[in-house]
Length: 96
Image (cartoon, rainbow, N blue to C red; front, side, top):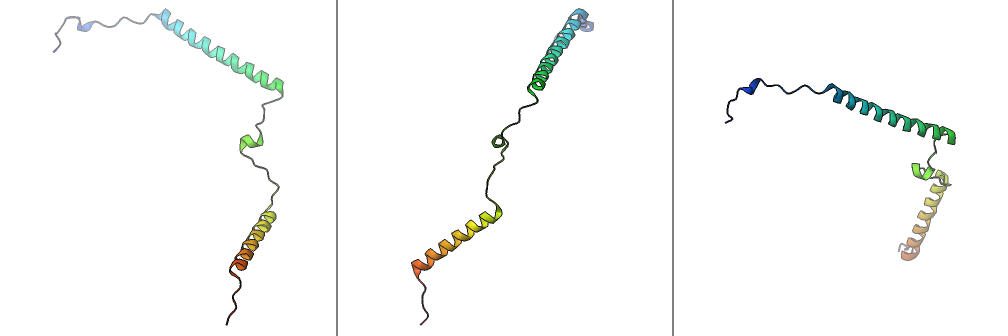
């Protein structure tokens, strides 16, 4: 147990207004510096002619010359080739 003392009514000292104003001013100055940096970046981007567009590969765009018709033709050729190999391997058996 804590001993009972008479200083129960003691309140903490109020914060120093000058310290509070100084902290606020530091936050304002930091925000202004960030804003100036953002404006400089924006001006640089405009001077370059706009933002740099990422390459198609970076965006995941894959270009190919294959069309659905070519893919279907390739698949058809592959199936015919495999069937041909199977029939030549096992041969066509004649019914007796």
